[in-house]
Structure formats: C-alpha cells, structure tokens
Amino acid sequence: MKLKTKAWLVSQGLLITTAVVIQLTFYREIKLGPLLGMAKRPYWEIITDRPPEIPEFIREKQLPPKLWDARLPLSLDEIRAANLAGHRRGHRREEGLRTAFYGAWLVNGLYFGVFHLLCWRISAQVRPRGIQPSSPKPNH
Image 1 (cartoon, rainbow, N blue to C red):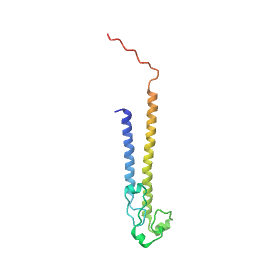
Image 2: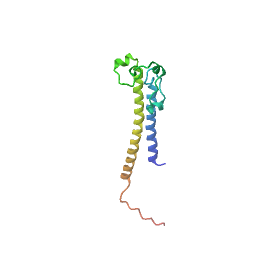
Image 3: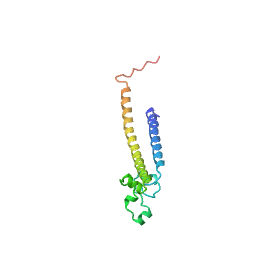
Image 4: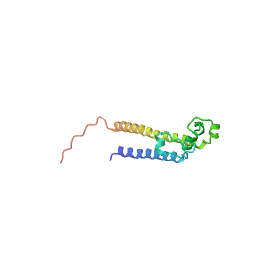
C-alpha cells in the first residue's frame, strides 16, 4: 500500500471518528422533541428534517400553535407561559445536529480536494527534474 493511501486512510478515519463523536454527543443531549409533550425523535427523522407528528391531545383540543409548537419564534415570556423551554432547547439541538451532520460532509469534501491537491503539488516538487537515466554499467 502506498504511503499516500495510508496517510489518506488514517486522516480520513480521524475525521470520521470526530464527526461520529460530535453526532453522538449532540443526539445524546436532546431530551425532548420540538412540540409540547413530545419525546425525543429518532436520529434519521431529525437529520432528514421530517416534520414532527402533532400529538393527539393537541389535535383534540385544537390549541393555537403558540401554546405547543416550540419551533415558532416566540418571546421568552411566551415560552415560559406555554412551558416550552425544554422543547425549545430540543428544537435548537435538532438544528445543531443537522448542521453538524452536513458540516461534516462539507469538511470531508473540502479535505478530499485539499489532500489530493497537496499530494499532487508535493510530489511534483519532489520529483527530480532534468536527471538523465544513467547508462548501464558493463558487467565484468
């Protein structure tokens, strides 16, 4: 295996490990979903930004969204009055999880380009220029 391939695998492994640790940390910190009375949503539902299902008790009571939807831009007083502080935090953490996920893809893509560009540039500078192959030595 070439040195370039080994360097690529080690560095890419470190990047992926870091991304996985960040994702696990963000996901573990989510306690509640973005709606009143909602539990934490599954990871891929958050990443794909699938809209959450409105809980049954909210649909039955036909409450206005300001009382149960922590995704809305509410003032601190409105959040406290509706008891949505934990759900607001959950919504912000879900956004952070999505941002970190797509950021990891972006960083890996940029790293791919920069790594190969640097390898090409360094190998072009290291190659000896203008050296003629030596003539074969006569066997005695």
